[in-house]
Length: 227
Image (cartoon, rainbow, N blue to C red; front, side, top):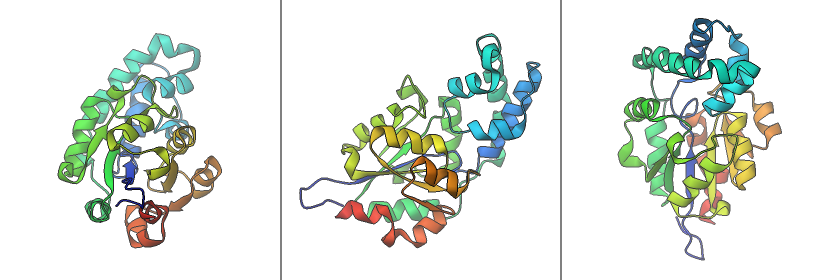
């Protein structure tokens, strides 16, 4: 949809915990990985870091041992996560939301911190390439969330300014990245982070899920992209 100046709007969408039910698969995989390298980490601490880029997650959870153990832990996580991807599924009404956005004339960009191997599984679970205008992932940037780089690349691929975009995400790190990029962020609860935390980080609104957002799309911040 274009406004009076002819500028198209865009919706940028996170994947893990937002469009696909994967957050707790990642928690389990990281927990097993940290155990394997001899540095156990409580699952609640891991969950708090899901959505960060892996380098930042490793630094936060391994501290001064991140340089020593990070590569081993990351490789183990990838292997453990890959063994669970048969459990990966998209959330209810994802296809319907993407179609509704395109029917409004909005650009739709998948914007995830996932590395190439995980992105492959995400795209398979979404089965929605025909509903996406572009995809950005970890390999497109040097610095992952909560740095704003990934949001900036998504804006470039959508061809819109920050004021003409809304980001949909489930983690505080999504919201913080958007704050730095000047993009409004809508939160969803499907990644397991509370509405209060998402709002405190700067989310303009919080919905239970993609399905909830779809049901209230006409009254959401996304509707204003047509103004």
